[in-house]
Image (cartoon, rainbow, N blue to C red; front, side, top):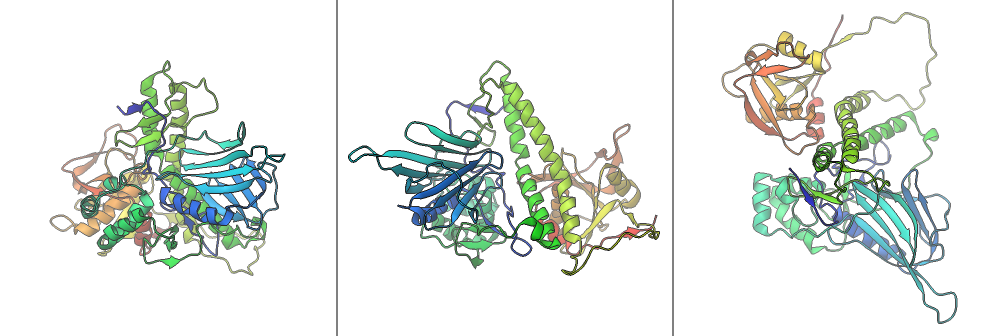
Length: 513
């Protein structure tokens, strides 16, 4: 059972931190900074250089949208969006009286923590009187996103969840630990190191030969040199990507109503991707709920919980101090179920939008006609992919489709795959030759099985595979339930990039009903 921590402390970098989360539109998609502890350190440096010694013109804390916006004289406004985990410039007019006419003393970020502290002061009203001190604290910890504005005596405003205590910095990994973790692709070992996050870990593992040098660069904390790596901006050159000018995103574009249909579609895709990445926290949140349920109704809700992997996680709290562990656990289970539904449904919705052809810019909506359209083609019960080695892979579209794929379409000698101990798609690999399929193709098929399963949010998923002839229906069981014999297991990494890559060679197969 997970250990309950006695002291208040925030989590170290969580495995479920978003790896890819688009937050705006520049053409089809806009990259953003990864809001991890390393980025927070460099954001604090950048904002400190921009704001130090300047007077606050206005400050607004929007409780509904969970956005805090700060206007300082002579510089663009900056908004901290706690829902989307973004920091961007803002074109809006100054609004809000919080800390108005105070001066910013410094902007800092605790070592290896995802929070910012903006320290301010205001001279006394009379000559010789003491000045007042205040601060703005902003937490980007995924399970504790909040902000607090206070002066010397009072809390002036709070938004989001209560702020967790500062996290203890993790140890700096030595060279041998980095080499061993990279050689075995052990993400868990890397994530125990200072300044590491899933996004940074992925960047190091993408180029093993330079992983050690890049980690040394990270812990030395040199001058910022932001680089775009895919859809994420890192404060240091962790890839051979395009340099960018700032970690602060530019202002959002024109109002939604004025955007072209293609841009609106891109914004919808970005929104669903953000929701999908947040849903990756579901397995970890379920562990927290399980631990709370084990405490019972009489215990107090702890500030943090140490889970089975040894990582300390803050417990999401409500504003009700009387909330018991059981009530909180039930609320978290409800959130987890919503996340799991998102993991199951959103990939198909995103894929459908991405596959939809763009309409010409000058296209107008056609008028409705009463002419009878031809019968719509019947969708096959599977999606078809092709591995790097050219082997066809079929992925069931649902429980009943899984049955049809496995028992009616697959051949006895085909390879059958399924993520172990979780619900998910049946996957059939068209390989009837003797022996195991080529390792690379097998791992790609296993990655598809992991991606189309409830374990999608995990870093690594065990996937069982066997010949189709060793799979049979579970008597009296629901659709999709199967009994498997002579299965072997491979470890697969759910990867949206790999799914898109294999989908790039996929041809949508349709028939007429």
